[in-house]
Length: 79
Image (cartoon, rainbow, N blue to C red):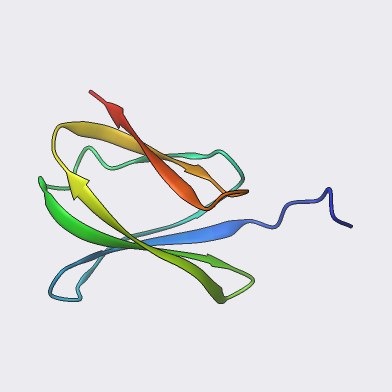
């Protein structure tokens, strides 16, 4: 059914390839990244174990990121 949303999996990697965070989320979920140091990261978004998107995240003083799973975009949310 097109109206049902599958949980997505979000993985955050350092630029050296280390997995920093993995979390299963539903549409428009907020992901806490306050424990991750400032820096540049790659965020991979999967649905049903299929890689849908890879995005660069430049983390400054962000507390969390919000996933819009319809457009596969990330929105940073300040402290």
